[in-house]
Image (cartoon, rainbow, N blue to C red; front, top):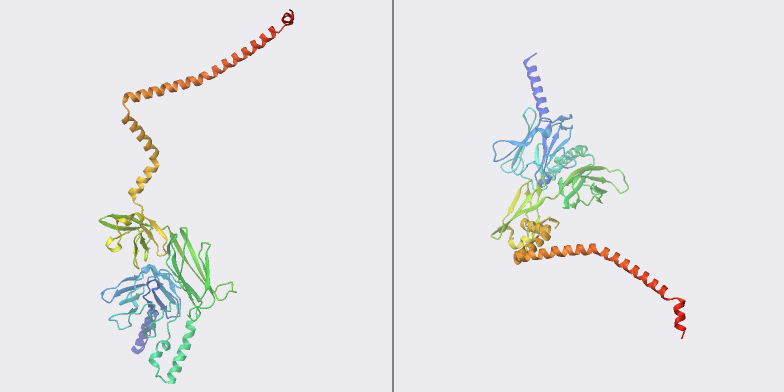
Length: 468
């Protein structure tokens, strides 16, 4: 075999190896809003790829080394299908393959994906001092478009904008032949956009008893278009439901009244006559007791307010309200309190004073009462007084008697009291005897009277009275 043949096979081998490594690409990145942040991969090959052992690294443009962004355990057992998408999101969506609450994507970042051998498979940078693509505005994403990157509306889990769509503004002066070529390319990409109808829920996974939390649902059709026909149906797993037209995709709130795990189901029906939904998704909400409390306050010279989180989970206190009969203070946006942590608010910030102590309350943005502050010292005194008021009064009277009366007077009183008791007991025992004697005497009297009458009224006596 000649050297030319050997060189030819080496080139073919290296080319195929390079293609195999390049089959997984970073396809789309969305930075904000934070809860809609996601990172999308795409498998350009016709074979599924096992991502076990893969990982993604991140660094800022100011940094010199890469740090872990998506670690190996997040890819354990994960497979990306042929010509399919793989979505890593901060919040659970219907098409999320990995939900990572710590997904950190900010302005001026560089991220790279590595395979099991630690080799860089793909890399993207954006923002300041990066020639690839600028920082996207809120609600927009960075998308791969052929060999370049563009900023456009997010297409999470779907095909990105086509070359003809993104370059129309730059090619207004092209010839008709170019338009036909672009149209043909667009038509070739239409089958890639066909997909199943999908719906997604945007919500936090933690809620608190009696406190409304926000929910939002939307969906996309077979071409990635926003669903505007048909109806959305919600089941909240607590006996409550909600049914609205699909065109209504506004945020709303729901309130659970008991702790537990609730599975929210979200379905899309193309019309009101259909019994089987075209798309369905669900999310589990953990509902906790709202153990957010005012744990401590300061004194008159420094009336600080301490708020404690005893829920066991991070709590979002954005727009919560501290309220008294005289003042109101709203916690700023993005105020969070970690599990079992406390936050102290200075009176220089809140404006509260010692006069607000007796009526201090903590409320949700919807003005639902979460905690009413009661001074621990006051509550203990009240409890003690309620439990032992009778005993205290009784003891007080006895003490006053001892202080006001002399020993001899108490002794006389006690003696008199003792005599009275003996007399009353003797009297009570004498009453039956007197009663028996009274009955006996009465009976004897009656007997003698009747006998006397019988002996006095005789015939002889009557005769003597009539004889002159």
